[in-house]
Image (cartoon, rainbow, N blue to C red; front, side):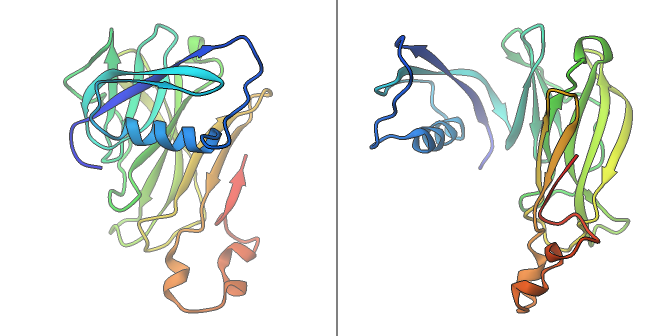
Length: 221
């Protein structure tokens, strides 16, 4: 994606019945369309399906490769940019300066500052959790790492590394990095296969993901 992207949100208007998707426009197709619209400079688009009507509305523009969005209790939005910036959308307006306090990331390919979720007790703890492509000392290798910090409304403080996964590799792709909490408050993170192995020409049975001494191709809690 290029520069100057907009954040768009789809508003769903229920029809009062259990959703039944048109086989010509199923759920996965709808998601693909919405993602494509979010990555394209589009002002407002109305869409209709058998299940619901959607209106795509521009919320903010001027973002650089936005990766994840977290909605704050007061209605503001935090948005990660892959190049390493965390942005705040306040009262419907993108703040001109990035939120300070983010960790150093390994930028390139699919990697950078990626997923973002609020702690279940964010209202009191102010913790946000984020995934990054973490570099080694000379940036020759990278892995998926999870950090947390407190967001005070203007900056991140108390930055803390939760885990640097054992998924180091040269490739700048296949980091995984999706975060989610379960109802018990456990945090889960996905780690992908890190891609580098496919350059070796060796059989997939020898892929490090087949062993239990690393985190490649895992979902960890």
